[in-house]
Length: 199
Image 1 (cartoon, rainbow, N blue to C red):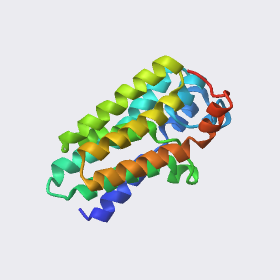
Image 2: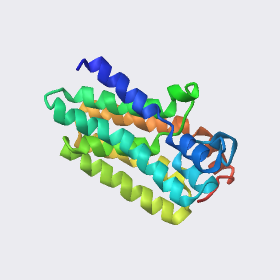
Image 3: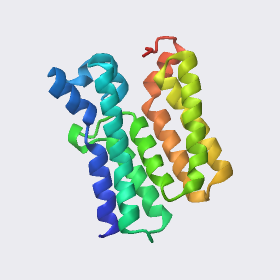
Image 4: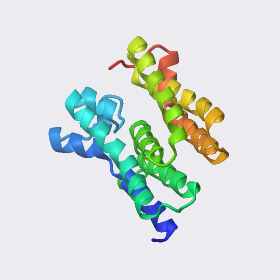
């Protein structure tokens, strides 16, 4: 399969707005008009219910992980940059969905998914991933704010990659970190003004 086509498919799969679809099917609403206005799992949990928020998280996670795992098995000799490009394409699809006129979520769940997928082939990636997950849990337990936990976790992931991974992964982790920050601009403003919602 042409590598360009693989990247296009990754973007399209990443674009599937499971939060938007779930809220529409379960409650008949446009999730973008409720809560924080985001289509992600956190807003779905607040507006539709925690069970549905978890389901959306899982679906967003899987749409990031599964394509990478499948391509690993079908084309194991591809260079790492192809798998990394797949990961970034999936995150970009979620953040700027072709199905929502190039608007979307914040990319946290799908980012976790693509990182777990990459771990199947690049075992050293497990170290920064575990660092990010541990950081997320600690920050969330203390402050009860998903956005803050996600931002700090993204920071810790990027810092950890500087010590354990090759340059292509360092560049990719920096891009993912920047995307998380950009997509959380409103949350950062709310955090600074002490207006950010807790779960």
